[in-house]
Length: 357
Image (cartoon, rainbow, N blue to C red; front, side, top):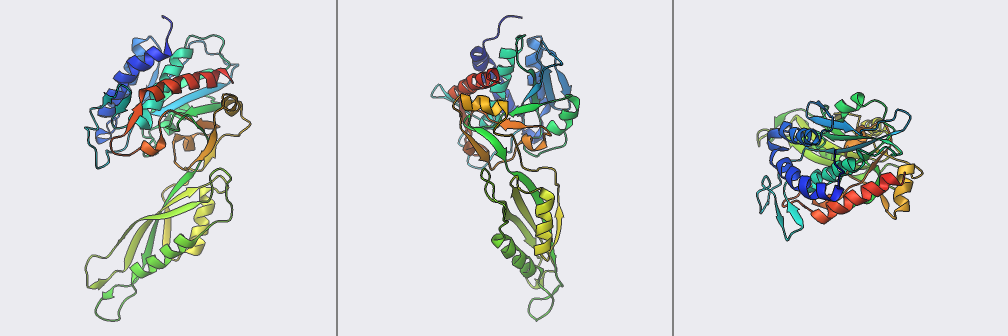
C-alpha cells in the first residue's frame, strides 16, 4: 500500500465523499448509501472494515493487544434541511475556492472526513502509542439505537475516544446531557360559556410557570446550570369546550452534577401534571482535564470548554473528547457550510493530538 498523504486525501476524498454524503445522508433517513460510500472508500484502499446496519468501522493495520485503544468517531447522518436555503442543500458546491456549502457539510461531514484522513495517516504506522478504530456511524441526530450504541458492543475494549463534531478545534471536555419529558395536565371538560369543568390548559400553564422559575442548586464550572425549556404544547379541539387534557414537552439539559433520573424526581415533586421521561440514557459526559489526550491538546495550545449540545459522546461508557473542524453555530442552519481550510487544519491538529499522547 503506498504512503498516505493526509492533505491529498482531504482534497480528493473530502470533495467526493462530502458531496455524496450530502446527497444521501438524511433523504428520508436513507443512510445506507452514505455508509456504502465509506465502505467503498476503505475497500479501494485495501483496508478491512466491518459493517453493521449503516455503521462502518476499521482498525489500524498493526494492532497490538497490549496497547490502549482510541476510538475515532463521527456520524454520517444529518438533520432535515432548514427553511431558507438559497442553494440546493443536496447538491453541494465549493465557492470562493474554500467554502463548501451543503447539508451536513459542517455537521458532521467535515469532522468525519478529517478523522478518516487522520486514520489513514496512521494506518500503516507500527510505532503508534495506541490502537485506532475509525467508526463512521448513523443515527447521531436522533440518538438512535442503531447508531453508535449498536456498534460499541462489537468493538471490544475501548479506553477513550475522539468524537468528531464542529467545535472550531476547541476541546469540549464536557457536554450537557439531554432528557425529554412528556407532561400531561388533566382537568374536566365543560362548556366554555358556563362556569363548568377544570381547564387543563390553565393547570399546565401553572406547571410551565414553575418550570420557568425552577433553578437547581448545583452549578457546573464548565456547563453552568441545568436548563429546562418547554418546547411544545397541545390542548383543546373546539373553541367552546374547556379542555380536559393539555400535553406539553420539556427539553432538559443536565450538567455533570445531576443524573437525569435525579432531575426527573425533582420535576415530579414540583409539578402537578403527570410526567413521563422518554429516556434516562443521555446523561452529561466528558473527560478529565488530567487525561493524557486532553494534556496533549493543552500542550498544543488548544483551549477547552463545556459544550451545551449533545453528541454520540453521551452514549459512550468511556472517556471521550469532542473536537473537530467547523463551527457549531452553523449546524442545522440554512446554507450550512464548512471551509476546506478548516478541514485541512483539523487533520493536522488531530494528527498532532494523537502523536502527543
